[in-house]
Image 1 (cartoon, one colour):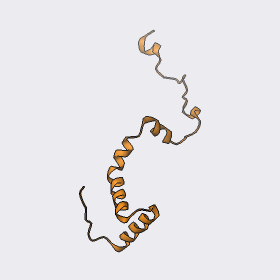
Image 2: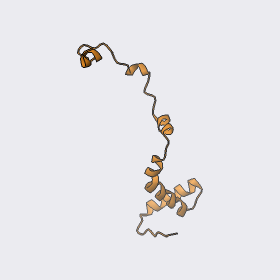
Image 3: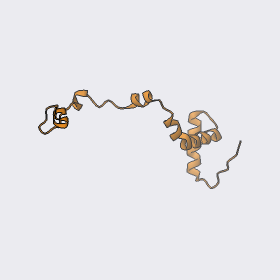
Image 4: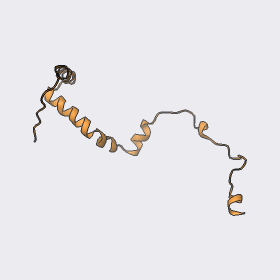
Amino acid sequence: MAQLLVRNLEDELVRHLKKRAGEHGVSVEEEHRRILREALQGDALEKRKSFWQVLSEMPDVGDEALFERERNLAGRATEQNLFGE
């Protein structure tokens, strides 16, 4: 496995990293790996969701009746208009 050395990090950033690692019960190194993995592979993981998962995550926007449309609008094309039947 490759190694990565990150230099010149701000002290406050390192404190946040240590705090986050402690909250997750892992080493600072492991937390760093997790953050990198999430940042760089997050989009790829999102793409792996099934169609059902995507649908189930959509918010409820209300009653379906809100999306019904009037079928007898003036000037609306009909089969009779289009095909001369």
